Structures are given as structure tokens and as C-alpha cells.
Amino acid sequence: MKKFNSNLSNVIKEFKIKSGCCICNFNITYSALHFHHVNAKIKKDMISKIIGYGDYYEILVELKKCVILCANCHAVYHASSPHIKVEMENKFSPVDLDDFLLLCVKNDAIIVTALDDYENDLKIQIRMLRNEVDRLKKQLGNKEKSIRQVLNIDENLIVDTYKKVGTLNKTTKELFGVGKKGSYYINQIKPILQKHGLIV
Image 1 (cartoon, rainbow, N blue to C red):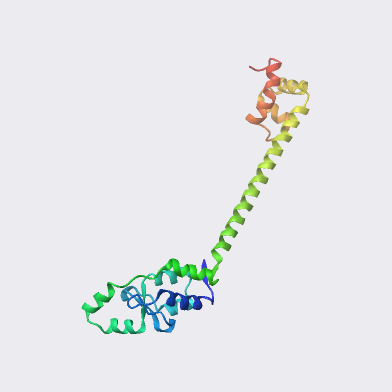
Image 2 (cartoon, rainbow, N blue to C red):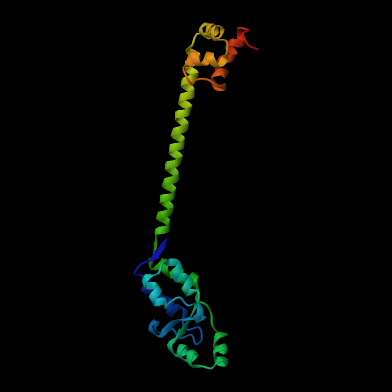
């Protein structure tokens, strides 16, 4: 999750001055510029409080609900009649989150721990892939070993064993050991038995 660090307070000051009051364009000092929630019903908290405890997402969500007003326009808005408020609201412009984020990057205000999480996820995936590769190598090694076993067994022994036990499964069990039966092992000895005319 992305977090803001202590440099965020400098970003807020610079952002307020850069944006200015959306009614009168005042931008002389950040201390006279306020974040005003356009709809008080969906206000979670004051921006200054959320900055103190909130994470990246919470702050951006709350900023999206605000406009910047100078102290004078802010006071006039709250003291005005509904008609005047509507006139002022027609001049409202939402805060520019792109500008805000650019200032955050410029001031090193964002701690991008999301990248750390992403890196950890990649490490886990790489570890899993390595385990899978090791498993496949082992499996391949076992098959190569089995093939070498078959190639090292004398043809006459394969033929004699088949004649003695009478089935392919029993032949592979006799030649390669318990559990060494099935199509893989059968396919290894089949060509030899076919060559000697014992099976079709």
C-alpha cells in the first residue's frame, strides 16, 4: 500500500498556493487557503486530520470531494443565502489530483510500499517456478534413468522374462521392480518383444 511521509505537509502548502482559490484566485499564502467539501454529507473528515492518519487512497478520495477556497470566500459561502451559494458553486473547480500527485513525487512525499509488495509477490512466484522446474528436472532425470535401465537390459533377458511370466505388466515388474509397470515401461520393452515375434 502506498503511504505519504512527513514531506506531505510541504506538498499541501505548495499545492494550495499553486491551485489558488477557485472563486477569486487568491494564492498569496497557503494559510489562508482551505479545502472545502462540496457535499458535507459525504465528508469523512477534515483533510488535515486524514493527512495525519490516512493512507494514499483515503487522502485522494477525500481530496476528490473538495475545492480550494480562500478564507474570505469560504466565510462568505457559509454565510450566504442559497442563491449566492449556487452562484459561487458555479465557479467551483475540483482539485487537480494529477497536479497533487506530481508535487508528491517532486517532493518525495510518497512511500511506495506497493512496489515492495509487488516485488515480494514476484519473489514468491519465482520460488514456485523454481520448485516446479526442479520437480520437472527430477521427473525427467527419473525417466532418463529408466530409459538407461531398459537399454542396459539384455534383449534375451526381456524375451526370457516375458516367456516366463506371460504378460507385459508382469514382465516390467520383474525387470524393473515393484511399481514399475504401466504404459511407460511397457512401451520400452514392446519393440523388443515385437521384434522377436512374441507380441503383435
